[in-house]
Length: 359
Length: 266
Image (cartoon, rainbow over the protein chains, first blue to last red):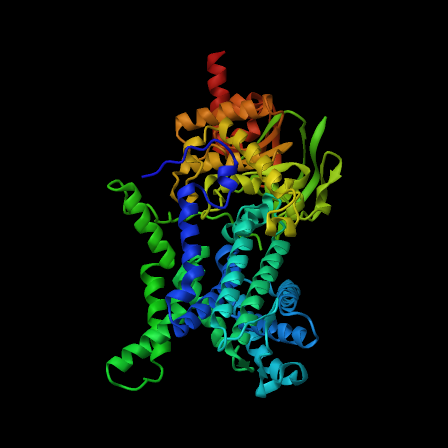
């Protein structure tokens, strides 16, 4: 059991609460950096995929986990980010500039779309965003000059400071690109959490009415959350499309958005770690299942993957709504407090009285 | 001098008149209480001041500014903070984070500064935390600083709500039933705190409260409401003995009884 004796405000403001936590994350970073020497190119590609999903997942996490607004349409913004990035490259921008600009522009467009969307609540917002995802599919086909329509696009060559980032020639470069992006996005996310805007997000999630009474502009805060969320999703989408090598309207269909939502629920809503844990499940489960079916001697079973995903999601919602990271928190608390942990420590109190909803 | 003024305010929900031609003014530095039976419109008055409701007639001014021109989130920026009758805290956050949301009206950092935690962000964050610690100190919340709201007992939540309102550094504090559901000791604490809020911090307090014991001890003036209209106003003692107030609470028979009782004593 460790006790924090706090002597300065910076101890709460810093990224890592103490030296021990810092060294744990430093060790993780070193492990991630030497990963290309530890595992084969195939698994390195899978790791890259995990990190790409995590970037997009952090985007949705900011909106759904942090601000409490559900979106089933993030595949649309992933597609937008991807096509913007490719078009910026074609216009002659260097990759990194095109990539970051694509994120920013996706965020701005997302924020504009959010202004009417966020007047809706709960299930209506979910339907609206789902409609966006389906609309995006058609838009990609219609906007053929920029998107290549149903024939799609072949990802252009990527050069960063004279190094070619190619999945087949140079897989570790791709891995480092995805790793760098995911760390960058996680850092931005973490910075938000320790500043007023991040707390305003949580305030809007937990009680809009008292957020307003504290001077939080609810409409503006939601719009910002949606915009930032779309920006991160756009970065994730750009990486996903480019990593796939070729992409068309099918690459970013609405099932991607639903998978993204499942991912953050399985990982743990509202936690940065949750996006990464969920991404590991989403990216490795198909591999795991195909290895399993191979072992059992049968060829691939259609629909198995989707079925297993569904079962896992239902199991998590029923038995562990806090997701994988929530489960880890519980185990860790139990160990730290042993033998004083109580079973109901994480149980939410039921409140029967609610201030009348004023709308 | 009058800090908050309501003039001929009327609010209707469909055919129901929730507040009927109400006028009142709260002076700077005083503790003012609204009392009345359930459904009298006390919380509705609060919700109009917070701009969640818009009256059909009348005006509400705070320090010379027309409150009716503002949107709900702009009201706290003038220095009006409030608590809620059925505690409205941010459940999935710690006490400290809840209080820090209270500092939102003092936010100076921009989105980009916060994303990269650059520029003023760190210094601002320290200042917010310093301000919040003063409130934690004042209300003895140290043991709960890093606890999640979801696991806290009712009495503590009530204090956290008060703390969050104080963290905004208001000029006017609206307390919606600060003592409801509190034990005798907790109500005592609340009494000293309200006294200190007025004396040490110089904050004007407007509160809704049913506990007449508390009202009698901390309030300078009381306004009694029934069916959205004013019954009586004056010092706590005056209002408590006002025949219209006794009638609203206990019925007409009670008046003759109290009159009889008084007569016997004489």
